[in-house]
Image (cartoon, rainbow, N blue to C red; front, top):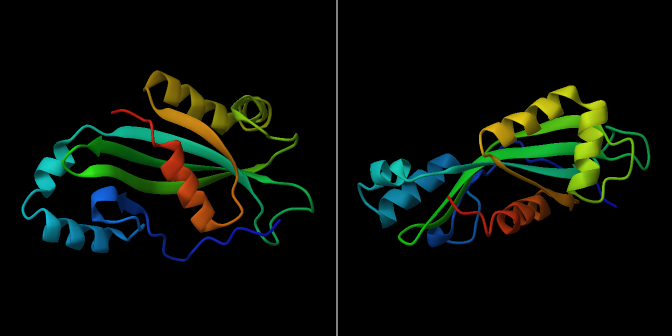
Length: 158
């Protein structure tokens, strides 16, 4: 397995009607205004769904051999007929090393409950505030992770 490398400047906006690429906020706003002049206020008013997507990964020089990091992508999404699928990544969060083998959401939740109190708080907040969360497995590269995020949010309704 390779090590994930996070870019210095994360391209964290995606809107399907503008193409299939992740872009920076500046590029997103320019392209949006070009395609949908003076509609950003309307777009911003559309209902969003917050999400937390968990994954495991290897970060070079950050863990002993065969140990994986548990991490989370936090963001928001919305889907509309007019604009398409929108995804914004707000932050990445690293919990620490998985003690056991994490193969699915139940394994992940067990690890979080046992070893990461702040993670248990995150799950409680998600349940209380109707925040969508899931586990997407092992991410071997940043582009792979971003593809997994798009796939994981495919069926999410606002």
